[in-house]
Image (cartoon, rainbow, N blue to C red; front, side, top):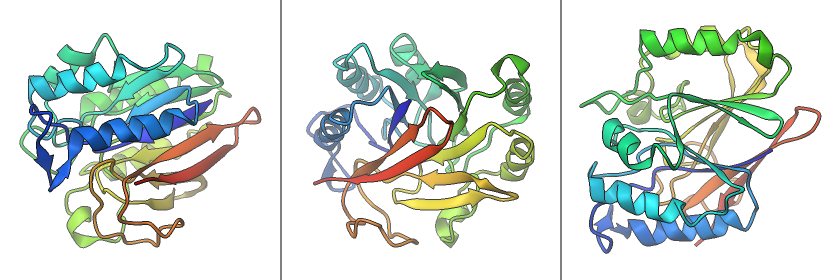
Length: 252
């Protein structure tokens, strides 16, 4: 299974509007065009989909996704710059919206919503953690490679400002993921930069941050492509033996 992760497009109602001084919609369309040349099975957009949390912004996202080939499944995560109810109303029939479970190819993807109304930091909450525990221990899915996706980073990335608005119940999530033997990677957005590490206590599980399709923040890790300021994304390949390959993407 091939997963294309794009993140933090920050679309708004007005098509020509600049967000952070950049043309958000045009850059989003460019990201889709670049990413689809890689023939993914699943497109994951990991949060901050609509900067102004408007119906028109979500319509523009929906219009762009409706042009995708039928062979590409779509998964969406609400971020702190999102309105989950509007997101689901606009795109619930087009895409899987977190919290949700997806089976794509040989892999399983658990989508988590870390959105907190009125807050920049994220949290999963008791109800969603209970749901996650049930999904992680489902015996019918044993042996299928597993990815977990959320908007906020579940670990500190080494940037004090970003770490202050990370995931508030990260410790509970990490503890819950420890015994998940099929877990291969945890992927997230929010930080507008490349980042790669491992899950605390699980050296075999990658934790991967994704660049934004809109604008980059000051990077805390060197960009492997030496293009930290460019828009980008990430590609993950779940191989037949269950191992995972990851490729950082940049363009522009």
